[in-house]
Image 1 (cartoon, rainbow, N blue to C red):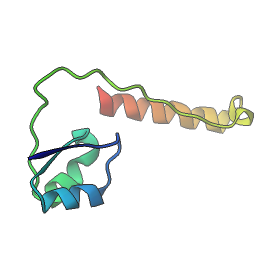
Image 2 (cartoon, helix red, strand yellow):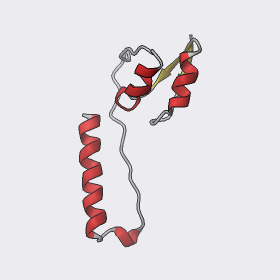
Image 3 (tube, rainbow, N blue to C red):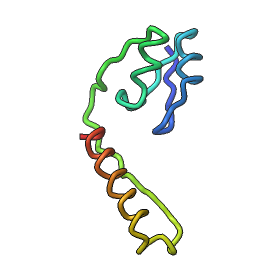
Image 4 (tube, rainbow, N blue to C red):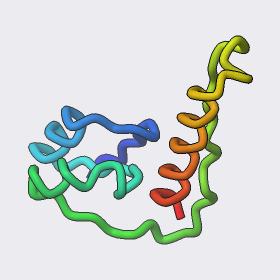
Length: 85
């Protein structure tokens, strides 16, 4: 097998290519589950501990005090916490 490293958000195309090869890829299972199932791929846990990656969000400073934008950021944080924990 050929190891392949992938960015934090792999696309379905990358997983489709993997399904037709003998390659290996590391990726967050929670973000890839639908294409993993669709392409008949298998998953295995990594054989070593992996630190939780940082989640970095950016926005224009004019939105720092904008109530709707602040609400949206809180929703995104909560959703990401649920997925990454």
